[in-house]
Length: 253
Image 1 (cartoon, rainbow, N blue to C red):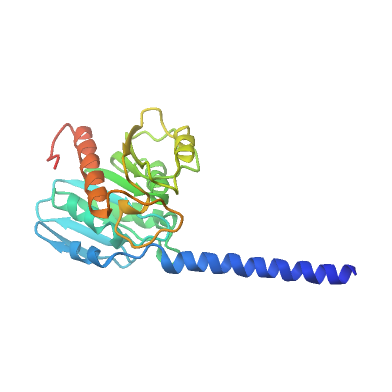
Image 2 (image 1 turned 30 degrees about the vertical axis):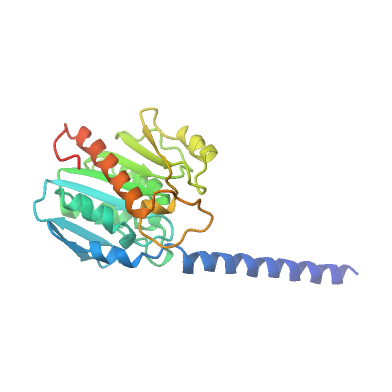
């Protein structure tokens, strides 16, 4: 009798493991792949984009302003999904670095590559944008490398699982009120782990996925803006924040 129960329990656990693995594989296969339209932002007037050996991208402005922008991708999201934002800032003089977390597609695996590349580029000012888990990853880069010249950081729909209340640079936090992956309760809980000085902006109608250009996000809410408008709105608010930090120098549009 005990042997039969043990075999049944083993079969149930094995079935549960198969379901969990299949679910994770489905997330990996389906989520985070760039929209076809993202390729159109890999070239354009005023900048050039080059692929990096790690699978990321570097956007160089034809009229560089001495500022760098680090964009850390969210979990399972490929860097090309942020090409619209990268192009927006590159047109305005920024050198934009988009590292890649490799086969795991996790931004926390790109921390060393990001900091090494920033040192190689040798610019006088750096800013960061981190989307979803990329927000935590960008704060990790800043916190682990106090020698790097970071001026400010923007978090887009970022869950905050650890304490970053000691991060010294000014932070902007954009949150969408249709984001089911970062519902209000989780969003507000994360505020206790950030500095009191964080500037919070609610993007009405925004969900989690449409801060970037990718085709699917399990468990997210339905956005009301569409990816083009949501990214445009996030870009403009973030640029204005960066410009304030640099003494108002630079276009706000």
